[in-house]
Image (cartoon, rainbow, N blue to C red; front, top):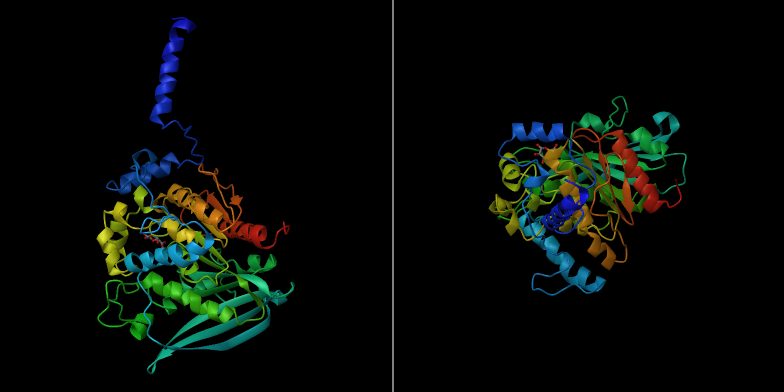
Length: 422
Ligand code: GTR
């Protein structure tokens, strides 16, 4: 067969390919490592870890109101659509913080101005919440650098791992909260232990902050444990904004996995947070639910019945009926800086679904005059992408939050908060 006889066949094949791919060159950038896809597919055969099996879906438009009206300007976003999306999240997903009144006070239990061999000042603060003779105490650890002019931008970690990860004595050091490295780059670093607010177990909301504040009987939109942790992050912020060493407009809320879901909610609910960082937050965090890739709504609700409100269970296996998806939760951080990170083997948390959600915040950022338009194709592993006020990386490796992730969080903070710092 010579070239002239096969040319029509090649042309036909290319046309077919073009049509089959919707006319768009399918450069998706990063690809999941085949070994990880195989392993996950074998261990959870009823779930999907293959890109080609993602169903087609339509995302709700963040800029179309429930009554069909289009959001035309920033004012309409702030007055109508933003509250509407927040309300949808409270009603259907995370639940609503009860309006029960309480008292709050701060007890600074320790100050060490020569912590980390003189590099930092340590403050340990108890945030005490009380109501009708009962009280609960959230311990906040804060290091601020001694070598730079105060106040400083500060990262606040929602620590969802063992309390030793945020050790104020620094006998135990962990990449999960790499305090020395953050101080060396001139940032403050703070953390609280999520179990101080509510334990991570299904105890029918008998303990923690639920015991103090919940109304009985609990309505179907009563807050779950993740909303309680996000509320706890805001109570820490209540203290941080009073501390003269901390730049109160530049406190970043950071969380990993379940803590990452919490960080996204905290940044959405509390606009005093100057930045949101979600690391590998996955289902009901950064990942688009409608992709049904990795962990699904039904799986998460069954495994962790205490994380979300009762209403959320109605969406088990019915993701397409959700009035929201994760790009809308993220868009509630706009126009403030937002960073999302994934790990290449962590298919449970759907790296591509998390990236796409971030991409789909672009219309809201543009409307709010903070253009942030990361391309649809993902960057390769270990390559950070920053556009305007949003940033992303997918790190090679498994589910975790490591120093290399924190270094990129700080690069991002340098770029959006300290232009020209690097
Ligand atoms: C998993 C859960 C995820 C994620 C993770 C974590 O078991 O399915 O949604 O939150 O735990 O927090 O490490």
